[in-house]
Image (cartoon, rainbow, N blue to C red; front, top):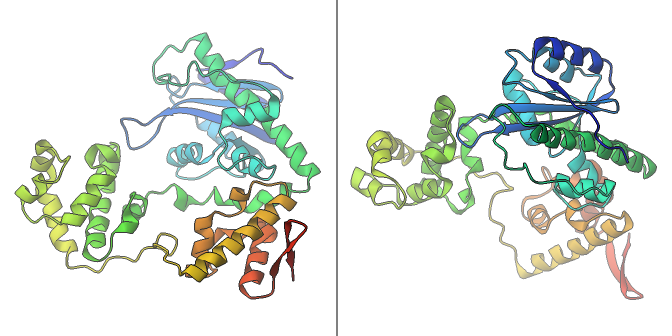
Length: 386
């Protein structure tokens, strides 16, 4: 097993230029970032780590006025960017250039096809694939503080160093199993701009508990969520510093019409009401006259009959059989909620029916629902027959 022996710490334009020359032409790069966003709306990039089979580097964007030469390398279409749980890192790159690097390879997603659990953490994946227990000593480091110690730099570099080895391991195994090409649709989806462009008009969809509202309450929530997103973005402050999700839900439920009624809602501070109360009451009054945007089908509460619930049980059996045949975790193929949505809302947008999931289990589920596939008990196990 390789061990980390040296790290390039890049904090000058000359060192950055040299690193970019070294990275030029590499077919893939392992990437990781350290960032802070506890006090801001936008993530603040504090450190960027890069690894190839021949080098490991930590780039300090706080010391460099311009990291465009590195971004030029990272945005090359002939270089695969390897990340773990890529969404947060991709969001950072989106805000840096208002565009996304591609192609990408997400080791968390790739691990699903080798039987690992859904959303496996990076430390667990390193342990399972490489047999290495990562240190957690600096997991709570404030990466914006300078100077960084040698131990902190080594800790950050190790993450991307082992990520490169995990990538090589996963690619080898997926190629052996004939599954490497299955991931293209999942990885391509990670480069869709709409995943990272927080449109204030769509902010209500991310509020926890939104599916419990309807009618006027839902219309009020949509207006308030749009206001919160806009203010948080313009002031570069966390959404929750303005209003928490549970507070938004409570306001939408009660729909206060006076400052006193607004102040009676638990958790709202007098200073907040003095500053924003008039605007909130205005938004509530207007929203009460609007028809709310409908909830997406995947967010609507599902109410099934007892017979439909039994059908979900049969579908779950199909999922389990398919997972066993392919040495996968059943939860990776389909959740019970997805199966319920398939019965309640049809087949158009259900993830289970697309990509590699569609090939492994989606077609079987459609056949079951069409009466073209049956479940039979044989020798203490379930068989599927067309």
